[in-house]
Length: 291
Length: 130
Picture 1 (tube, rainbow over the protein chains, first blue to last red):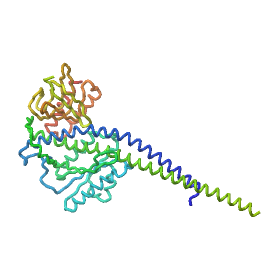
Picture 2: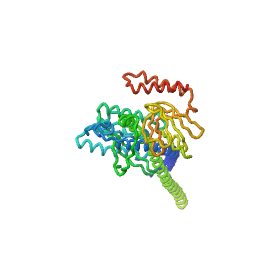
Picture 3: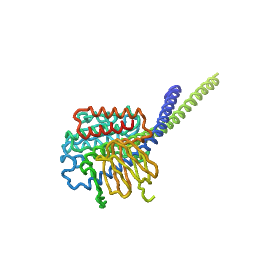
């Protein structure tokens, strides 16, 4: 059994850990509010962008000459996966959920004999994937310096992806991120961005007749790269809100666990203190009796 | 207000401006400035760097946009842009740094005509503001 001193030390150490986790929870909660706000503010842009592209692609009749970003390169051999994670740890299952989702996708790709290329955004994802998929990772981007998610970072990633696509380095591009549902639930998502998946919105039959200036394909050529950056930006916003939410609940749990542990240890400490006192008393009494 | 329509300007970060009593908007469309009034035909077009003028009643609001896309349908105009600044809030330092940025872009090798045109246009507009 641990001595009284040891118990005392353990209690103090658990208490200080609890203080840290509590502080982290508070910070995460404050950041979460901000991140959630910007995620919500960012939605109109990506929604509008999506709508316009939908309208445009409906107006394009000549599917064969459609821009490659929309129609794809016609092949399905090389898959590029962009795995977006955080740069910091201590956020519960946030990063592992994304990599788990990504890994099962990787397996599917590799099993079907296709080529796989990985780009990781955020250092944690890179750390988790480099062991098993080192030879597939072609790039690792991290935005540790930028405090908040901003569009120009997303644009950089988007431009890089497009550049690779134009060089013919891959045929299909999928991004992985966590969608923020609420503080407790974040859903890992995979979203194909190249070629653009036209969701089954055929029910909207009222195709608007738009005038285009300049021509449809010129607009599309201009818009599609932007859409990719926008989708990545959206993913980054969702991700940062999810990260904070996940960290908050993880730290909340940790704080609670530490509390339970302190309680248990205190009881143990008090018991052994009492036992020591009783032992001493017995010794004194039996000593006195033997006289 | 019978001659007014809705306007929404969004950038990636937020809904920048939302008005429902706009009487006219002039946008720097890629092929020339374009004025939009109520009941304009549905149109999709994209923007070059320039000034968006928003007329509401007797007020005129002028905004600098760097790029963007507009969609007008059923009397509501959406402008999506990656960078937008109210001219009144633009600072001298920002202006010169943006001009530098454009100048840098011009120096880049194998620039295609469209990019050169956009960069020149940007310098043009920014110099006028200066």
